[in-house]
Length: 220
Image 1 (cartoon, rainbow, N blue to C red):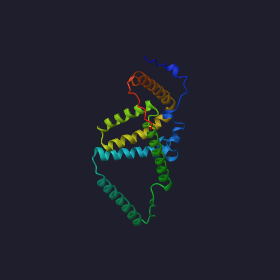
Image 2: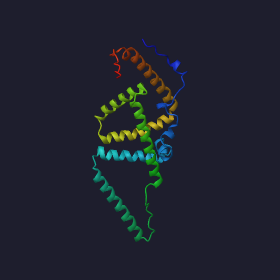
Image 3: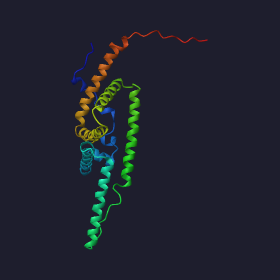
Image 4: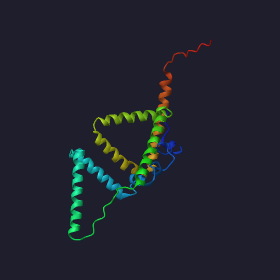
């Protein structure tokens, strides 16, 4: 029978960060404006992004708006507003309003692309390490998570799934950054217990499976 140590014994074990990371969560998210938005340090941009994505989700999923139709209606409304604005300014001899020539500067797009590129490479490298079976507990946990994800995918449309991922990105990093110590504590306990369970399963089940004799290669 496997013997599991109590939680008090686990307190003496050096506490590690979630997923074995060494850097703070802000650095993991790439820092800069992207991390500010995901961690809600720039509350105006984060709130505006959340409201905007929610409105789009309601239009496409609830109101069943078509993308081309929505784009056309928004363009028509924008053109009418600008036309009325300039016409009124000419009629009353007002100064013409200054219209922005760009929505986001070039550095913002470059920072976003750099962050996505770095995070994609790290995720791929981590996936390959898990697939090799270096950490058996994490290997089976990943398979279980992917299976649950596939089951959830049967009950969601692609748009709903994207919106769910967006909500997770806007909430989970913020909550983890706020309750980092508590999450690391309980996640560490779960990972240690999972490793002990796998070791017990390996010693009591896998190692007892009979294996055929290894044939030696004949040397000429």
